[in-house]
Length: 246
Image 1 (cartoon, helix red, strand yellow):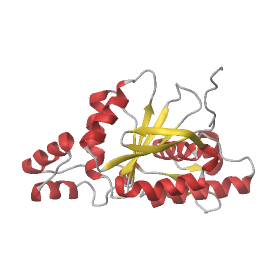
Image 2 (cartoon, helix red, strand yellow):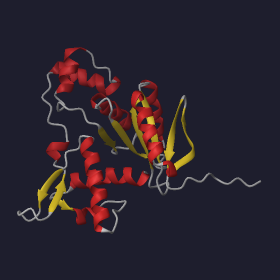
Image 3 (cartoon, helix red, strand yellow):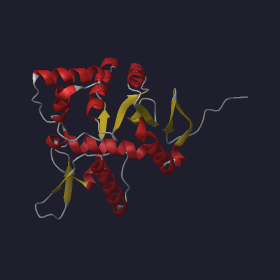
Image 4 (cartoon, rainbow, N blue to C red):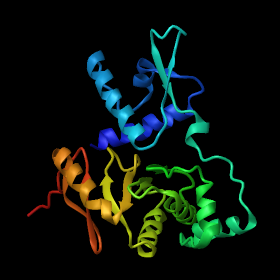
């Protein structure tokens, strides 16, 4: 499970950053963790990933490499992915400022301002930018303001030794937003590779959690994570507990 979530995030970034469509072979060389070597298994796994991203609202384009349709290639066009340029009134800008600081939009100005963010709320958001406490606080506020009800936010580089205050920002955010939960923590292979926190709204925590625990039962770290008063599972490739000498 940690492998697949990491690959979905990396696949999204690769398709978004490329200046030309990429074939499956090219994606297999660029995206980590790697797809299987066997062509049939590689194709099936990629198709599952592609459909998962599309279900999350990420617009993956399929284009012909040679113009004859004999080989397909893929990309995410920035114009399809990023929010359109905003044309907000002064009242809407003021309401959006409130969203950044408190995510409490009220009145017609707030609703109309959010409506101009594209019309469709994103279901998957990946936050990996400034890596400061203040920056993450602002990013979480913006993301929460536009996230779909069943949406998921993935926070990168949590528990990284170089950014210790990111966790403080997350705890402060959870105190301000009791409607949000940490759905799970995805452990990585090394401490500097960093850990991902996955967040969702409280009403979606149990449905998502049950499916994750059922599907990836072999990757559940026994202790889990205590976000008092809420608990969430931790998924890792290494599920051992530390051995304590007796």
